[in-house]
Length: 155
Image (cartoon, rainbow, N blue to C red; front, top):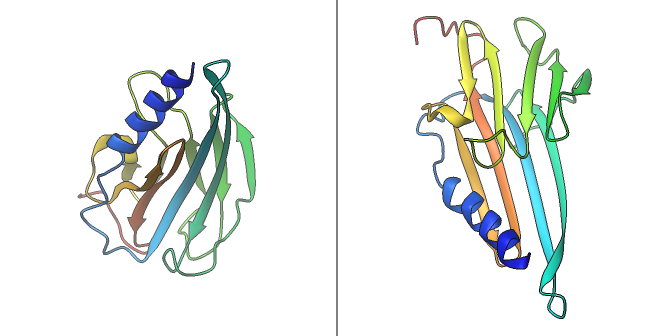
């Protein structure tokens, strides 16, 4: 069991090396996913603990975060959260997944804003991942940069 947990953490870390190539947007949605596996050497297995946090930063990652107006669980691994304010042109529904469906990897964020479908799983210039990986632990952030006043329908 421990080898499976370590393999899963390693695959998340290897996937998560692509930071967004276009970081010109002043706002960002970010989902931070952190996990740790505590090995049990005697039983050759381990116990895993996981946390996640979805936030909207209207002034970039260094500014204050605006909390979601409401969140609902889509499944045991994803949440849909509604964000308002912070200059957003309309209420925006953001899906954050800390263990996306089969065929996808790692921590992900997806939302539609001003005519563009932002998605960290689609290798877009505005979206990507930042990570930190250590043995038995992972710290991964899925994020998308954008400008609240930009129309992306032609992008």
